[in-house]
Image 1 (cartoon, rainbow, N blue to C red):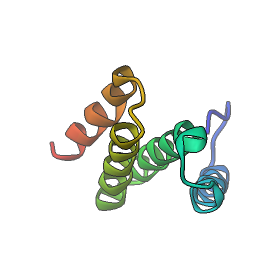
Image 2: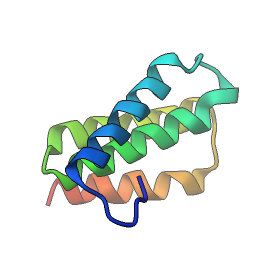
Image 3: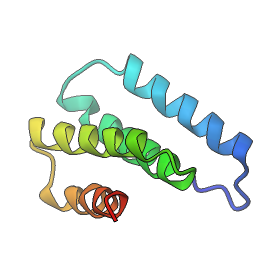
Length: 88
């Protein structure tokens, strides 16, 4: 995700790995941070490539995960900020 010289290929691989993390992580408090982070980063990558509906879906899932598992409120800043920019 934070490659010094990202490419379409590295970004696509990152999305695949984040999708796997979300798919295979057992639901629960122990993996909530991982699921939250994966959705947030997939949202950012989708927004980077102008796939705005997909980006918004992932931001919403990140927010829902944080709320459901009562993660720190400070984590919500980024997905709220990014989802807001999708609308404008």
